[in-house]
Length: 271
Length: 321
Ligand SMILES: Nc1ncnc2c1ncn2[C@@H]1O[C@H](COP(=O)(O)OP(=O)(O)OP(=O)(O)O)[C@@H](O)[C@H]1O
Ligand SMILES: [Mg+2]
Image 1 (spheres, protein in one colour):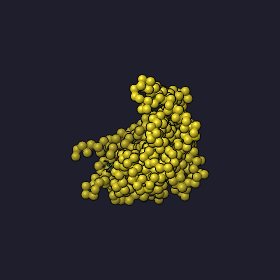
Image 2 (cartoon, each protein chain N blue to C red; image 1 turned 90 degrees about the horizontal axis):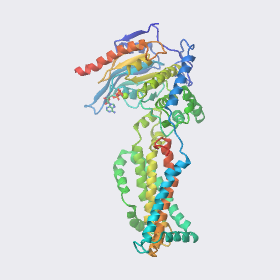
Image 3 (cartoon, each protein chain N blue to C red; image 1 turned 45 degrees about the vertical axis):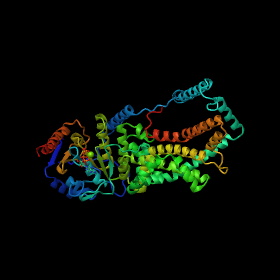
């Protein structure tokens, strides 16, 4: 089966399509603007962002450095408020994984996960077995009692993933979670993430500036422009999983997307 | 165009209330075990290569690296002392033989007074320290987190920290008279600012990332203070406690040396002052040594282990050396 690629030039069309496909329970971002600074001298960072993420969908947001990707995730995670526009997240607070692992160093790996369970109101007796199950899900069954500083970078990110999953949110936001890892570990974690995503059925909104990573992981890749950030284009990635980052189909689409991304960046030089 | 839905197995965490999409398309479980095993093996290999090895240090190493150097240093000071005495650099009443100081200690012990004197001071010091702790902790929290209060009290607290607490003895005597309350007041005025400042510094150094991570997990307000802010600030807080103890002890000794009254039990400071009145230089030196040794002992027995535990559990101790 040859991978069929569909691209939609018009982001409005794609949002409308996603909207009509329609699932209640989609993450829905409608006409979101965000500007920082005093009113009057405000710097627009995001402009008229429209985006839908269906339940169980894996979407990668791609954009140059500083284009507002983290800002967008912070808005969705309710760590910051949009200047205007509406954001709807099904089932309350989404889980968020940061670029740095953000594990609490005063707790063990297991207790980090248990804290997430506790803050969600899981009764005490249930916490430990659930934490252990989540650690097994990220293949760290033996790490329950390990301190954060005793774990390698890749293990920390897996514990962080387990902690995010402990929130049992139907939406998982990931802000360049693998950017600081070496290529071999990152590759393994791509595989893990794909597996866990398909096992749990969680919707994933994954931010990256690595085009290949986006194509390797996502069902849909959304390209943001810079200053202000807008949705430029939206690709469906119909390459069947399991994919590999070296696959020819992944490379082909990556080339196409990279071209577009470079075009976006070049535009700024001409102004 | 085939939609690229991949295989969906059973949800691992139970899906509550249909939050989870239930659709499960074409299960393609065949050929899953193979790559899955591969991946698990690969990961186990990576983990083993990356895992940080923590090695324990043997008792002999500890002896050589930590216990021996201070013993050598003390022996050196004693030897130097003895040499100065033998060379008659100053008259005996100014620098008595180390043996005489030892005799004073023995005498104090045989009279059964030694432990009483030490306990009087230590119990005052520790009790005063505990009150200081109870006051300084909420104070530090509020100063660190409430902008207005910080702008008002912050500079005063850091200013007070540099004021020698002996300066508080005269007013405390006038306010409260010669009694234990006066001593505790002096201790508080010395220790509260340094404990509170330690906590403020600890909270200031908490990475905002932890607070944001806590918020995404659902911790806000007091819950966040209890589960995120305070534990994250603990290293700075413990450093403040250690310094707070040093300030408590110093303040107490100042108060004990200056304030004399038969109503007050005999503590180390008073003992020192009494020996001065008796012109007993060996006793004076003994008093100083006892104050020094007790202060260090409390730090080593109580505060150093707490600090080590806090730092080690976070991997902040360079190594277990
Ligand atoms: N709190 C803030 N106040 C003012 N400006 C901000 C704030 N947060 C972000 N910005 C600005 O918004 C822009 C987008 O930042 P953001 O961190 O979202 O970018 P990003 O796409 O995540 O970049 P990177 O790829 O480097 O992580 C940047 O120009 C940044 O300077
Ligand atoms: Mg970012």
